[in-house]
Amino acid sequence: MTRIVVLGAGYTGMAAAIRAARKSRRHGGRVTLVSASPRFTERLRLHQTAAGQRLADHSIEDVLAGSGVAFVQGWVEGIDPQAHEVRLGGGRVLAYDKLVYALGTVTDVSVPGVGEHAFRYDDHAGAVALAERLRSTRRGTVVVAGGGLTGVESATELAEAYPRLRVVLLSRGRPCSMMGPRARAHAERAMRRLGVEVRQDTQVVKVLPDAVELEGGELIDSVATLWTAGTRGLALAREGRLHRRRPRQDRRGRRAALGLPPRRLLGRRRRRGEPALRGDARHLPGRHPHRAARGRRAR
Image (tube, rainbow, N blue to C red; front, side):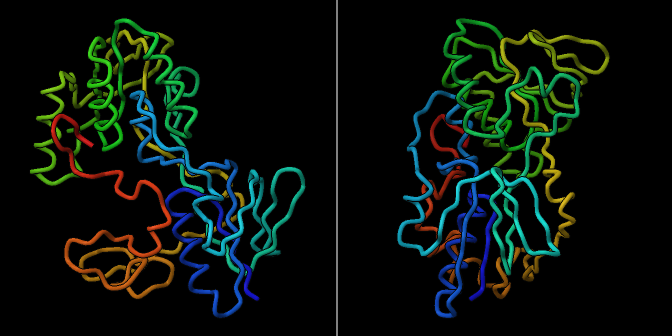
């Protein structure tokens, strides 16, 4: 029996575990999913939680029901690739034949003050804490640091949910620079319509309890600072000496997953217009967290 252990129950870990269970069932494989939390956190929707929206609460066990995947709640403290073992809090050890590392990343807090004074989307609790702060704030400035998708989504959601507050988006370059011209233009129109103040080519050098300091010494007062300007991997992977294997790609540059042929991404061959996750994704709640913005919202 092949023992497959998947670390992390985000979108990647959940899809990998469900897919591996389906593929290995005929061979007598056993798949175990490990997560420190009993709930499935839709990390791509945490900006909606920060804006005060109530999202469905999904239990991991409920999501996995009927998939054949065993769930173990625990905090991963160490990985021993030589012994093929994962060490969890409380002294529990899980042996494996194959390991899927899907613990994701956390916010890069290398800028002074980010770890102490900025709100972060490292988990559901961080988004809830920001929502509680803004709900009790009558006026002032909210600073969103980071011009990527998460920063832009957060800035627009917060500006719409809390129109009494001034929302300032700080970006080292042009916001949404990774998007195509039409999508980027749409996001920029949405930010203008919602009154988001965008300051590009701006470098934050320090986060204070009630302000952010920019390169050159300028201070922007802030009742809350949300930091979305970069992430880093966990030390766990480095300490466990895990080596990242470059995924295969098809001719269009799309990544193959879980050892499937490059043109079969987590399911059968896709028809034009179909999402990449198909079949196994039916188990996952919130399958379309990044639908294009409609109406007033830019998601």
